[in-house]
Image (cartoon, rainbow, N blue to C red; front, side, top):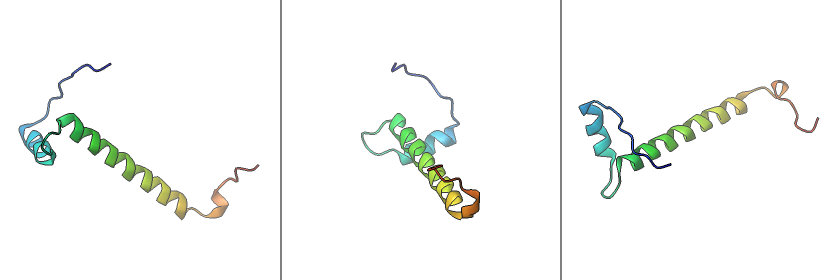
Length: 63
């Protein structure tokens, strides 16, 4: 399942990715970290929204 694909990016974006890259890391590693960070932020936002809901809006799980 490991097929290499090319992703077209601007020279500016490539330079920004290069700045994020540590020695020994690949661009795939950098992108994986960015995706993981995005997913964590999205989850935190969803958790914040649930936390801010009124208890009347929530449905109990025990029936």
